Amino acid sequence: MAGASSTRAPKRVLLAAPRGYCAGVDRAVQAVEHALELYGPPVYVRKEIVHNKHVVSQLAERGAVFVDQETEVPEGELVVFSAHGVAPSVHANAEARQLRTIDATCPLVTKVHVEARKFAEQGYTIVLIGHEGHEEVEGTTGEAPDNIVLVQTADDVDELEIEDPDRVAYITQTTLSVDETSQIIARLRAKFPNITAPKSDDICYATTNRQIAVKQLARECDLVLVIGSTNSSNSNRLVEVAREHGANSHLIDNAAQVREEWLDGVRTVGITSGASAPEELVEELVSFFRQRGADDVGELRTVDEDVRFMLPKEIRTEFAARG
Ligand code: SF4
Image (cartoon, rainbow, N blue to C red; front, top):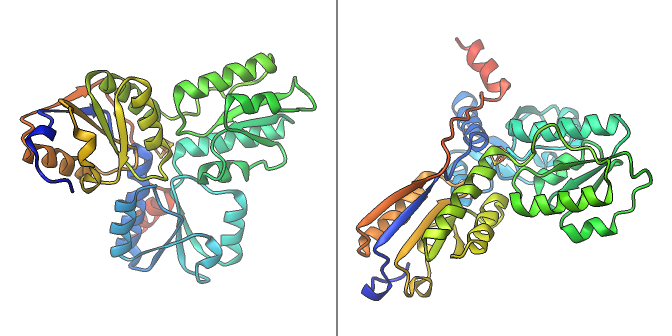
């Protein structure tokens, strides 16, 4: 961590609200915690349950075993599927290995899977807007691999060649930049005027709200620090949005990663956190700035959130069975 210096000590700290945990992450983390309580370790988890190093290492300490593929889980054991969702082939592999499964896929990711299946059944070519290699994109693509084409940028749209341009639909990853995705959709509409959209936006409420909040924050701050891990899509988007709206911005896992030179001339520092970053990391960062002399700590609230999801049904069933 950088050492104290009066010339590099913002006086004011402004926190974005909403920030941090979304309902899908909260549910997924709780699913692993409850699984550990109910069944005891080891509880296998396919991929990172959510894209946050801190959360993953805390769960690992409690007995969660993170694996890359379901085929690494010993036969008959318990495995939790992450919030990002899995392809049907993963369920099939798990069944073949007689694994007990808890599906912590966020319901808002499941919504996109359902759309993919529905569009495929109706014979659409489906343009999936998303990032290649992201687990959510892999899971969604697995629902209709023969129908889905991936588009990552507006320029990718120009390259698309689709046999029946009147039978095209689009869906998106849930954690994209709202503004950039609008541009891609506009390009798609220009190229395929009859393109079919999902009934409601696929970019989720948490991603949207955190971007609205960080835009406002960036206008008021010289520097915006985003707490989140490097593989967290929505956290990376927050950094981009903050930069687009006039602030310097960096993604950090925790307060120890603050670099002294970022603070040069900074009077107000903004803090936000991605949907998978726990609040304790924000509190540590605020303490870091308080120790350096920040005496004005406030919150900039743009949207109220009250979304909650029920725990995965496997957990609810087990609780019910145990009375
Ligand atoms: S970021 Fe959105 S889609 Fe992802 S887990 Fe949270 S609520 Fe669900």
